[in-house]
Length: 523
Ligand code: TNX
Image 1 (spheres, rainbow, N blue to C red):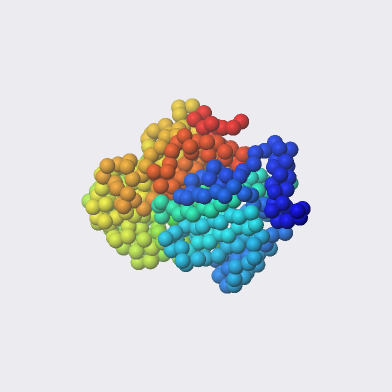
Image 2: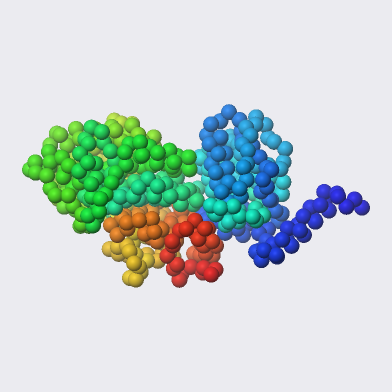
C-alpha cells in the first residue's frame, strides 16, 4: 500500500485537522447545511468534507471585468486583517485548476436573478459564480459567515481557516432590502455611516436610505442654497453642534456603499419636517419670517409655503444637485406628517415635486401619505403607519415598501427598561421584530404589491455609535432575513440559535448589542 496515495493523505489530513480542533477545544464544522448563516440561504447541500483557506492560495477572477475585479478586491479586504494572508488576485480568461478561489459571472444561471449566486466549496477549492457582480458580493457575504468568527478580528489570528464543503444556491425573496438611518435629528459623521454600511453588508442588505433633512437639521451641502447647511445644519436634537456632509463626503459614502452592493437613497423630507430649511431661508415660509432653529422632538408643525413659486425653484435646485451625486434610481421625498399643510395644498405639492424629481431621471419614494396624490408610474410608497394609504397606492399601481413602525422601527424600545428608544408604535423585542411576514401583515397588501422591507432607525434618542449598536443589534439581522429568505423557510426557534451564534462576531467587531433574554446566547 502506498502511504502517500491521495486517499490516505486525505484521511490523515482529516485525522490531523480533527486532532487540532480537539486541542483548540473548538468543534469541527463539517456540515455545511447546519452552518448558522443569516440570512438563511434558499438551498444548501453538504458533502461532509473541509476546505482550508491557506496563505498560498490565489483568488482567480474572470478577466476584463472591472466589477468582478472590485468584488475580488472586496473579498481580499475582508480576509486580510484576521488571516494576515496577502492573497493575490489573478485575472484569468479560463477556469483555473483546483486549489484556489475562483469568482466569475455565469449567464447560464439566469434564474438566480441579479443578486443570486452559487457557492461551490470542495476540499480543494471554492468557485463562486453569479449572473451579475452584485451576486458575487452576496456570495462573499456568505463566505465570510462560513469562515470561523475569528475572521472578524482586526488583528491576525493564528487558527486554521476551515469551511465545510458543499454547494449553496441562493437568491433573495425581495429586491429591496433596506435600512434607514436618520442623520437629521442627530448628525452622524461619515465614519459612523460607513460602519453602519459594514453591518448592512454582512447581512446582504442592498439599500441604505439616509434621512438627510428634518426640522432639527439639514445634513447635505447644496451649493446653490448654502445657508441650508450653514444655518440649518448647525444644531440637532438637544442643541448639540449638528453637522452636514459636503457633496464630496456624500459621494464617498455612496461609493463605499456601492462596492458592497448597497444603493444610497437620499431623502429630503417635505413639505413638513422642514423647520431647518425655513430657518435658513425665510422666503420659503408663507409669512416670510424665519422660525427659530428647533432642537426638540415634536413632529408636524412646519411646512414649506406650497403656494410660493420660489419653493419650487428651491426644490428644483436641491433635487438637481442631489440627483447629480446620487447614482441610484431613487430619491425619497418624505411627505409624512405634514399636519399643518392643508390636504388641498399637500396633494398638488406632492404631484409637482414628483414631476421635478422625475425630470432629474430618478424615481420617487415617499412615506405612505403621498398616496393621497396621483402617483407617477414607478413611484414607491413606504408603508409605515396607515394601511389605507398603502391601499390607495396599490390601487394606483404603485409598489409598497414595508416599514411598519410596530415591527420594523428599530428606534422602538425593546421593553420599558431599554435605556434609549421611543415606544409610540410598540415595544419590539428581538422575536417580535423577526416574527412577521410582510406579505401577510395587512390583509390588503399582497406579496406582489411589495418591493421589499426597510428597518428604520430614527435618531431622536441616539447620539453615537454605541447607541446605534444597541438599537440595531440584535434586531437588524432579523430584518435582513425577512427580506432575503422565503417566509416558508423562516422560523424563530431555528433563527434564534443562528443569531446566538453571531455573538462572537459581534464581540470581535466591537458591536455593543442588547443582550436580550429571548436569544439563547452561548455565554
Ligand atoms: C414617526 S415614520 C416619524 C418620524 C419619527 C419617528 C420616530 C415617519 C414617517 N415619521 O418623524 O422620527 O416616528 O419613531
